[in-house]
Amino acid sequence: MPLPILSTKELEIALASNNPSRAIPLLDQRNCQEIASYFGRRCNQPELSIEELQAALNEIAKQTGKKPAVVYTLARLDQLELMAVTPAGQPFHIPIRGLRREQLLQTAIEFTNSVRDPRHVNTRAYLPTSQQLYQWLVAPLRPQLDAQGIETLVFVLDSGLRSIPLAALHDGQGFLIERFNLGLVPSMSLTDRRYRNIQQARILAMGASEFQDLSPLPAVPLELAQITQDLGGGTQFLNADFTIANLQRQHNRGVYPVIHLATHAQFQPGSPKNSYIAFSDGRLNLLQLPSLRLYRPQTELLTLSACRTAVGDLDAELGFAGLSVQLGVKSVLASLWYVSDEGTLALMTGFYHHLNTAPIKAEALRQAQLAMVRGEIRVKGSELQTIRGRIPLPAGVAKGGGDRSLDHPYFWAAFTLVGSPW
Image (cartoon, rainbow, N blue to C red; front, top):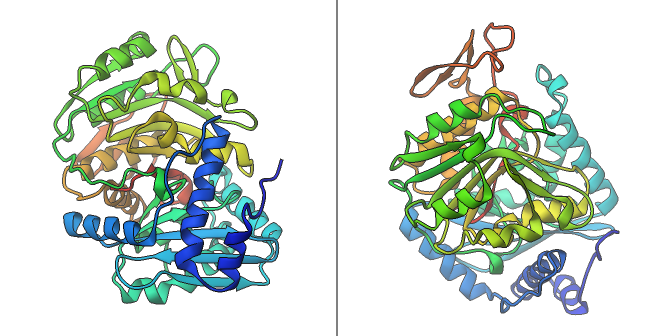
């Protein structure tokens, strides 16, 4: 069932009077209520004021050296509302008049489908819709963002837009990821706005390469072995040891701020019970995720490296966007569609490598994606060429040999930071 276009008369009045200082807190609160309701909860967060949000953005800029902005979108029946909050000055509001919600959402679906289809990896079929969405969602904001030296964009997207691979939006010269660090949050009031450096954090890496009723993930053993060499080192558990109880047991030791799960995760239509994360001993649906208690002690980063979200389904989008909230973790790195084994391995090795030096998680993700865009990470014969050298690929991954570029957005644009980008 479609979600309401507007939930309060007050929000409509604030938009009509061009008052983003009032409209943004109301929209953020509406998003909080929307996400909480999907998970059968109540939004218990107080309304977040512009002053509080700007203070948080200023603190992040001081601590990380990366200046962030928060971008809000609201797709109304015949108009798109763009609003942004930066560390200094008044928030700004740009209405895109005459843009029908139906047209915007259909373009978003067409764009996402063109990027995620592996049959198109040797084409640029995505460009027309990619450039159109950029013109609607980002271009109107660019003059003010650039004038303030903004480096990180945190998007609070409206329903129907949350499964867009934002990194692959294109301005005619390059991808959005070539200019900004990017993150997706359900609402800023639901987001942990504090900063913690995780450059020496230990990694708990778990996953499965074989499943009884799901497709195999043959690159998982290599993926776990590679990533546990980064940050402060780590411990890995594979297949039979990848159980719900073992994840809880290892997490309770309190020595792993970073958890990496190389397994299937499905975000499907309908109830949150339909969406799940697969373990070797069963599945946990979205409503069961809090039982993992990954918030005690706090998990700074959870990676789900083999996800899929139903394109164009509002329930699946809500599950994906609300993932960090439901898990109680600060940040989640997850993918919007199944990425090829070599693409996932390439992205993950680059991401964890850059986490060693990047001040924020979104910067590490951006650098890994850029390395793929530029051909610095690619397949050479039966090996993956990475920043730290060549990695032999398992037989089930090295299909047919030969050199293959991973520069198409299919390979890298699915990966999205949900929750805090820092």
